[in-house]
Length: 146
Image (cartoon, rainbow, N blue to C red):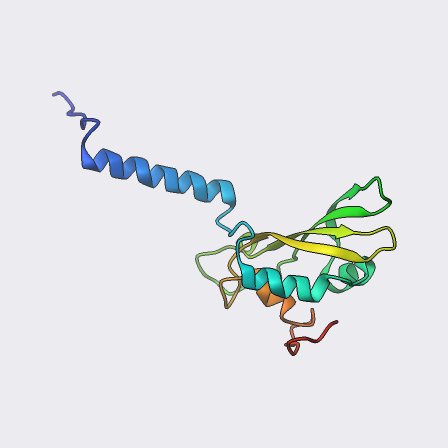
């Protein structure tokens, strides 16, 4: 018995190829949004810019990577901790927020850029969920600073 291979112009083969490409892209990006959520970026900037880096790390958790700057400051990669999450299609590792922080030589955060923003527990943005609260889960009024 001889197997029949679909021709290159077969629509089912094109669909399989498109699906495989989508899976590869999702795997590469970790299924998260790569920092393209303007609302989340605005919330993060409002909360973090001007804050002492030590206060930020005390409130939101330790940094993952640190890079010295020639100016005496530092760049940090910060990733959110994952607390208890409801059951669902996403695992705990899929509910993270990753920021790139630029800190000046006196320890103040000059820039906080959302690098990866995965879906949150109750919204499309984990970063928004974290930084719309005071770090202990209580909502913070718009314009308030920690």
